[in-house]
Image (cartoon, rainbow, N blue to C red; front, top):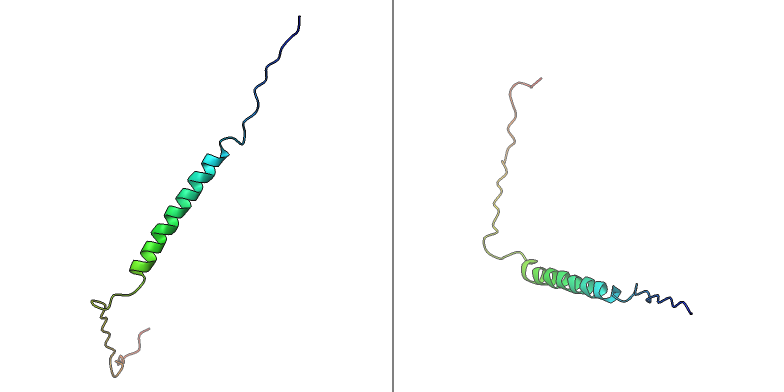
Length: 67
């Protein structure tokens, strides 16, 4: 009588494509969101960004030196 050994084939690379597909999909989403924010929010708005700074004309000196 013959002994039959049935060994299934290894399938290491069979599901690696799914991981690459998920990685590419996530990368495309991140690039798309970054491009959206870059195009819509990179320019400084023309209104509401007035910053007024006044500097004294003559610097004030203290009459007594501080230790």
